[in-house]
Amino acid sequence: MSTAADTWYLNFTVFSAFHELELLDLSWNSPSLISFEGSDALTKLRYLNLTGNGLGGSYLPFISKFTSLEVLVLNTLYNISGGLPPSGPIPINPSSNLSLSLKTLHFSRNNLSGGISGAFFNASSLIALDVRYNQFMGNLNWVQYLDNIRLLSLGTNMFEGQITTNLCKLQYLRIIDFSRNKLSGSLPACIGDIAFKGDTDGQIFHPLFETQSDSYNTMYDLRGFTFATKRNLYTYGHSFFMLMSGIDLSANMLGGEIPWELGNMSNIKSLNLSYNLFTGPIPATFAGMNEIESLDLSHNNLNGPIPWQLTQLSSLEVFSVAYNNLSGCIPNGGQFSSFGVESYLGNINLHKISEGSRCSPGLGPAEEKDVGDASDDSVLYTISAVSFVLAFWATVAFVIRYAGM
Figure 1: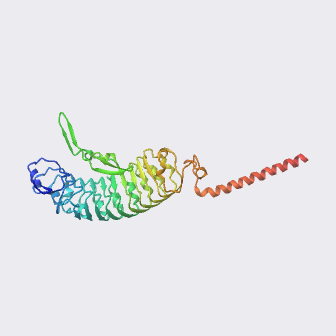
Figure 2: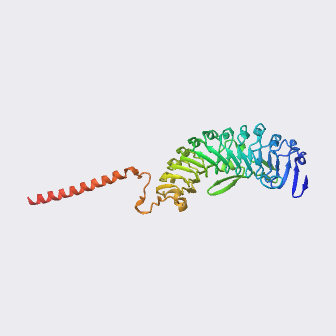
Figure 3: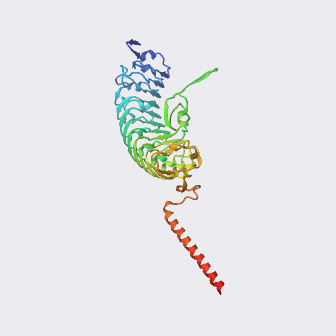
């Protein structure tokens, strides 16, 4: 280890004697420069965190040296001068041993750009990938190769193109975060076939490192998985996959009607489709999302009523359909009695049930009428009234005539 001015340098040879080393956390020693000379000796290293450090040049070929590495955290990297993060394509060789053992890769809040497809063609061992807050571009066709992925966090990049049916092949998914990109087109209906269900493989949820003795039990809690839901950003630890499941597609250019098949996602807890170009009605099938806690459909072009079936969502805590073109009555049953006016702003034809004749109090599933029948009803009422009047006067005339006889 040597120092110069405001920078200090670390060479991995200082750890070469620790052949049994499994966890190494060197985060936030910036500004610094790390050399991986001597890293070959760390054959049992399973967790490496270099967040907030300076890594110069082509700094990821060393991955292939750590043959047991399961978790790699490389968030917020700096160059030698402490300036902007390193830029350019992601420096992973597709032919490296990335696919052999790596399960979790954090690569967020850097300045990386270009495509990342080739880097992950063989990364079938990954269960969590976080590359948010970069400048990655291109389509998302490469995600189909992540056979075991549970968390796929690609938010705040420049990905474009459509979300294809390839995504539906990833049946272990628990979190999809594609927010703040340039994705367009319609949503594939097959997303509704993804189970978003807890994993049956208990090993996925075990803490990576656990130390026990007669007097204490300690655990290295691998925190850092974040997901936005209920209008807040939550951070989860090793139990992430059991606590949360959700989709965040907000702030893209997705359009068309929302597939009714999404209502089949009975285990999902959060769905955010806000700030897109979706049209058509809110699917009544959303009532099938039994575990949903947060549903945000705001800032789209949705029309029609809010389906009364949504009052069956007993776990719903946060709901927003603000700034659409919705009309009709706001349901007042179930959780809807707890939602404030901010959930409905920007829908001028949407009214509370108590607002006079525009809504029918007590209108429920058994009494709801088809809008197209309204004109027929008025004609029927008119005919009935005329018939009553004619019958009345006919009766009066008959009585008078009978009395005069």
